[in-house]
Amino acid sequence: MAKPILARADLIRLIQKSLSLSARDAGEIIDSLVAAIIEGFHAGRPIKLPNLGVLSARITPPRLARNPKTGEVAKVHPRRRPTFTLSPKLRQRLSLTFGENAPVAPPGPDPNAPQ
Image (cartoon, rainbow, N blue to C red; front, top):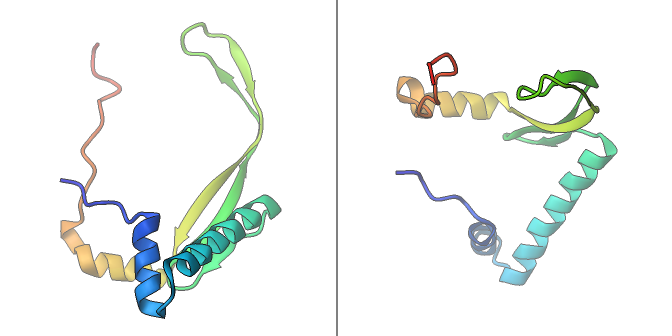
């Protein structure tokens, strides 16, 4: 069974309790943080979150791709893709927490299996 997602409302409650703020003020903090992260992505600046990691945008170069159904060649335009790099402290904490018993996603379908 999957663990529940930590949603915006949960974050608001956590901020509200830890900083003794109203729910509205806590929501504004979250909205401001998200707006700053989005603005950083648009500006092409990495966003460093101490003890969490770095959010950045990586630009993938233009390339030629092939439609697998028709075989037609198509041009794929360059794109800006978000990336996240864990901080060393968080990476170490996660490896100590989960160790060898880290949860693993179930395997997907085998692409080489006969259809």
